[in-house]
Length: 460
Image 1 (cartoon, rainbow, N blue to C red):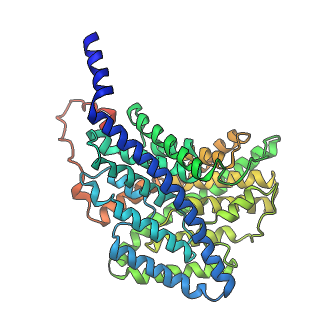
Image 2: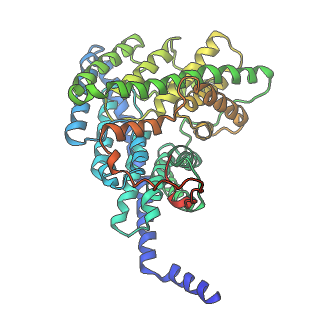
């Protein structure tokens, strides 16, 4: 027994193949941190490009936005087929396929990154979070060329570690990155996966901090506190309203994608143009405030106690809702995290304007977390990511409650997880179903199914 342990330790410490695996994993995590940080900086400037154009002449977006979305859709279909949409759904779909390179590749990652920046420059209501997850997962998965990873690493570990590290590095939210990988992408937890995901998150976060410094996504510490019964009433109200709105958004994204699938095969550019026209109409109605990711608006509302929030109309959440919906349905690459946070923040601000049950800052945070949880169906990720983005622990219980309420009521409209539903739709539309792993043989009647080891359990 002792001899076997010594042999195992010797192999662990001295094996060249083991050190190649560690080296490849280290390089992948460092690259994820660097690329995610650079993507964040470029995304910031891409959003600014549109508003600079709109300031030069308010009529220019009337042409730039719809034609820009057509150009993005054409480039995606012509040169980067499969790069459309968020990217998180493609990573989830890849974990269901035997031939993952049909979905995950560095070429598609480069296309998703470039086209997301182009879409933001045209005013599309998209974020960088989904594409960041895809790019990070592609980088980590490509490390298999340096070292021969074991099968379970190939199947889940590399993709999940890349996705978690991408979220962590992009938004300076390491805890949310880990939780999102298990709660939304894998929908399971195993210690073996944790030993891959957590180091990748730590390494990528360290690189991001080295390049960008330690920061909170929304800028500074929150001064919000829960002190009165009215604050808990606000938790209930914001959770119900924003959660229902998030569920409606998820339902329309999935069903809209399914309904437009036949048109996208033959008239994808026409769909992109119509979506671009609706998007720019929402921009005109809101003085172009709904264009772009929505980060600036959400940040000003979160920091209402220390900064003057940008004035928004009561219809801003509706305009942003429609702008984000048509941006996704247009078939261009782009994420929904940042637009969802902006929409939820504006819902909270509207509820405060209608009846100030609690402070504006608190209702904004509650609306943000409830809408996110309702749309994405990841309540734990919802309150953790908002807590880390605002560097605020004072409202943790309130955020947890609002997130669970939003998550619960969203089931009245959309019972299916958003990204997993989009992953299934992606597999159906692109003909990948036949490339999935083999199904287990049918069980004889009266027998129990054999337990599958956690490291190779199928992803549901």
